Length: 228
Ligand SMILES: O=C(O)c1ccccc1NCC(=O)[C@H](O)[C@H](O)COP(=O)(O)O
Picture 1 (cartoon, rainbow, N blue to C red):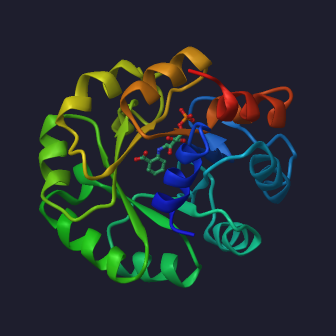
Picture 2 (picture 1 turned 30 degrees about the vertical axis):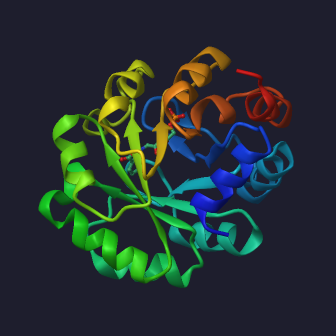
């Protein structure tokens, strides 16, 4: 299923659309798996009612790997977002071949090539999440055919050494076009954060707080089912 369809379907069921991230490593907190298996975490996220899955394939800073992304894609009915610093169209092809559901396209990284990369991903059957962090980057995203725009509440150039603030989603919300799915990404750790994020955005992308939860399934479910 496409990521956009799954988000709309979840919303229509009066549940909160959550893209749950299987996060292997955080530059700030180090190892996040703590001996757990990625595919077990996938099952927990499915049982908790996540609308989609995110997985970071970047090796250098997040210790991800593309083979695990492929396994996650083929093990789940949920759409899987590939998060990485994509700068080549070959990587888009690989993501589609792996049966990914969506791909991250970072406006700050691709600048005037953003629209071209979005079209290439769409032609390959992927949803596109164009990531922005300020007005200039939203202007780039608006000039594309992207199906989703994500405000990253953290500044990715700081590689997660900032905590991020969900109020960025609020500040930039008026600038996001109404015809795309709007995702609030990163730094969402509590139901209060989620309430603020989903007051403006259609979906929330969450990793760290889920990976750190004592009872992961119960915690994720409480986000999916919260009456905001
Ligand atoms: O967001 C990016 O630009 C990015 C690109 C490549 C690898 C990682 C990237 N960001 C980090 C994340 O994706 C976060 O883990 C995700 O948004 C969840 O955030 P959090 O809930 O704060 O862990």
